[in-house]
Amino acid sequence: MSQVLTQLTQAVREQLTALSSDDLRWLSGYLAGLADGKAQAGVAPVAATAASRPLLVLYGSQTGNAEGIAKTFADAAKAAGLSVTLASMAGFKAKKLSDAQDIALVVSTHGDGEAPDDAIALHELLGSKRAPDLSQTRFSVLALGDSSYPLFCQTGKDFDERLAAAGSERLLARKDADVDFQATAQQWQDELLTALADAAPQVQSAGTAAQSASGAQPTRANPMSAEVLAVHPLTIDAGHEVYHLELDVPGLVYKAGDALGIVPVQSDELVQAVLGVTRLNGEEAVTVDGKKQRLFAALKHKELTTLHPKTVSELQLSDGEGQLPERIRTRSESLTAQQLVDALKPLAPRLYSIASSQAEVEDEVHLTVALVAFEADGNSRYGVSSGLISRLEVGDEVKVYVQPNNRFRLPEADKPVIMIGPGTGVAPFRAFMQEREAAEASGGNWLFFGSRHLRNDFLYQTEWQRWLGEGVLNKLSLAFSRDQSEKIYVQHRLKEQGSEVWQWLNDGAYLYVCGDAERMAKDVHQALVDVIASHGNTDGETYLNDLRAQGRYLRDVY
Image 1 (cartoon, one colour):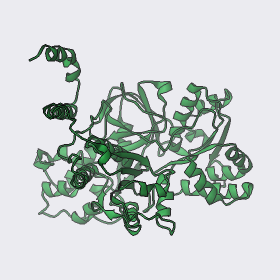
Image 2: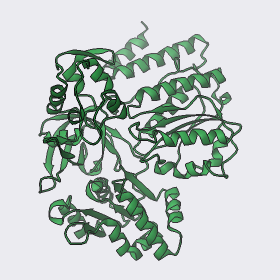
Image 3: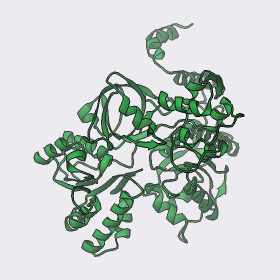
């Protein structure tokens, strides 16, 4: 061993022990690449990248999953020697598609087969007569979705068809990924890199390309343990509980607008209920992902609450609502523990808008969580993650990771913002206000908040009143639907104050909506359309589409 290597080993030994196994594997590959380069008279492992075809990695994301996959793929493609441009569909000009000879497109499907907000404009344009000529390009689509919905991966299917209709050649057939998307996404990445390498020999294949280091931040595949610092109810009456959760997350980095992924486990009570109705032994061994474990332990990490159509079909479950114990019709004597486990989907993480800013809370993260609770056949049942959070105590630990949401960010400090967040939709706006206060932002802040009752459901009331009293919050518009005979919601307040809302928008305000996608977001959108048409004498839909294209109409709806 040379003296230089001896000194280097001593210097980095401590740093190397802190790396994960994935990091070490990447580093090993990287060093091997350097060694190969030395052996080839100093030539780098990847030769001239300028000769490779320009690759555009384009994403449309609602919750951040598509964005994360696209960034990972872009990093791998760059490491393989490709000339890569990574871009969001938000504000992306369709004519730029023809500038990239190869296109890797990752897009999610939102709601009932709808395109995510940042993909709407491009989705519509490619489906119109104004679609550009893409006959000189090649493409591949990775579609994300949830197969429990009828229009599974519909947006990805649309893009795949529309790119082909515009003349582009399929470099790799579309892949559709379900909520447990990691394996499908990795397969798509590997196969596409191989296809690109076949077309351009100087590009390394998926098997030999150096992979980018995962970094120190936790991920969905590798979450961190966070200790509970505080957990307490924000509401008074039973039946509509909302909890405030504070976690200790040293080293975790997030931004206002991001979401926190909670990796839940099923309650022992629900698992025992499943074992009871199936009359299976929780100690029986089953195989999951090639590993043996007890049936009881396996069920702790399976979806028993949100049941997939495949599960319903294979287990012959009853129609309607309810969790697994209530929907099993008659237990077949032939049902085995392995068959039960195989029919159940893996338990997916749950995402919650972060309700804090690190400018205020530093190594903490705060969440605002509504408890999902209902009765089924006389039994009390709870949402898997909200139920877990309601049972937490100080000192407990949960597995978490950050889901970035770059399409839900605050603007410059001098820009005004209008925030519309009824119920737990107010969570990211608490983070916004902490951030704006810490930055001494000069832009105005206006919150529209609504819930059922002033007395019980005014989440973070003292904080909003303090910000209002100190002038950090300029306007607070409240709608408590059940405090009077006629129900009043935030969309009604928007119309009542339409003239001033229009003035704020004219003055450059950024418009944010967070909360329920099925009703609230649609009702708020229509109210805004009406306000703009009435007070701005212009078409509301067109105006909002323009705002969206400018990055001034931002929604985090679920």
